[in-house]
Length: 86
Image 1: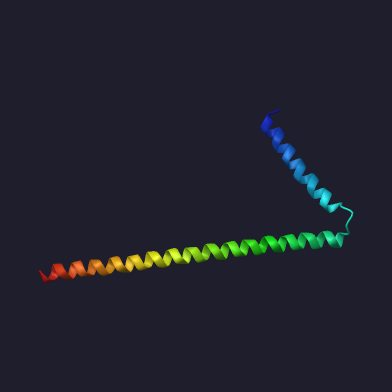
Image 2: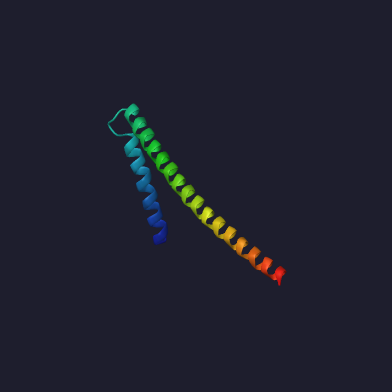
């Protein structure tokens, strides 16, 4: 057996053991379900906040690129107009 397989098995066993420990803890099923629901909501909220932050940054980058593109088009039109006049 390779060391990598042993470590992977050990890690998976630890996760499974932790899960079983939470589910079989001396608290009621209702408390366990409440804890799981609270953690799920917390993770969902964090994911939503992160997605909103990424969207906001992306919007800012797109706006900057669009402004620079408009500026470039304006300069190119000026150059073209100067060439037409000469």
